[in-house]
Image (cartoon, rainbow, N blue to C red):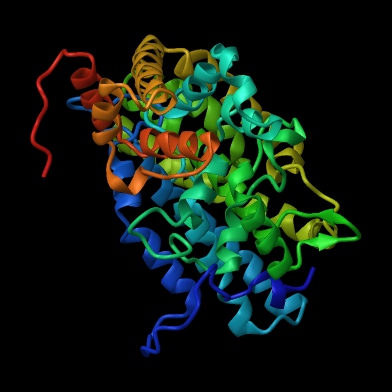
Amino acid sequence: MDWHKLLSPVRYDQRSDSGLVDIRSQFQRDYDRIIFSPEFRKMQSKTQVFPFPKETFVHNRLTHSLEVASVGRSLARIVADFLIEKQNINSNLANELPTIVSTACLAHDLGNPPFGHSGEDSISSFFISREDLKSLYSNDEWSDLTRFEGNANALRLLTHQFPGRRAGGFSLTMASLAATVKYPYPSAAGKMKYGYFTSERAIFEKIVEECGLKQSGKISRHPLVYLVEAADDISYLIMDMEDAHRMKILSTEEILEYWLPFLSIDYQNSFHTKSEHLDPNEKVAYLRSLVINSLVSHSADIFIENYYSIMDGDIFVSLAKKLPEPIKNAMELCKFISYKRIYTHPVVQRLEIVGHKVLTSLLQSYMEAILSPEKKISKLILQTIPDRYHTEGTLYQKTRCIIDYISSRSDFEALRIFREMNGIDLPEQIV
């Protein structure tokens, strides 16, 4: 793979330039388009892991994405310096890496539905339970619907021309789009996760061609995907545990037990000295910064050590799987504790139940409406959907738009619509 193609500034489906002078690079414009978008702002009301408490601050999708972008920028800065110093890559080109990676990090969760990762399962489960609908779709389409994937939905959101919106969706550069596609294959490939829906196959193929990701008949990941993935792995693992500490699910002593192994003995001794007079939350926050710094450094080293294999498209496992044994063991322990103590905590499980009820009910109502549009109630239900999510075409295209609408709702919006649709609350005037 060649960096000049990998960092393509060509914008998806943009027919002409505005002609305006801009002090930003094309990739900085990508970053700003995400930051200033309503889709990004809406993530402040989407669950990361814990439902929004009344007093204790925990992460939501927006704050998580901002932190992932920060970590991703640091990783890309190290790699950019390596490319400039050791690979003789043009500095102007290499210096765009932090912006491209942080943009992809900001966008990586845009496609996730309300109610955390359980929302993805709820959408998939609805269609799995409706085997009677299978014959109405192609095999590839049914695979998309029964295996809803937030990563694929993010690519759709970034590129789809919704009614009333400009061509190309966000019209990002090909480099930024390629850096968001973690899994370069469709749902029909049968793997645990995938990168694009049937509806975005042509878009994906265009990205592959423009960025030169196809070699000897094989499609490879964009190299920067490894950095985006590492930034997400580092951030969610550590920040979920810090949230659990703030909610008193994990004690300060437990956090120290699980996190100190990420540091060398010298750094551990320094931490104990400097944190001696800090309160518990500040102590955990300080240790969190040291742990993230350690993981960023190790992950960047792994990328550099495997640089030629990555550029040849030979590596596909995450950087986390290649970390030094003590660091990898510490990460595995944190994952185990997170599953045992955080993701199965009663408050998290209750949210999953609520999310499942809400999303299943909404899908049931809207799917019945598009399957029987001649009914009066169906017409009323379809009229509640904003024009942006209306479409003509095949049943799959209509279904895709229903899922677009539901998955783009915040937790609170989805709950409000559910309550109104089920006669629990009277409709509110939405301005």
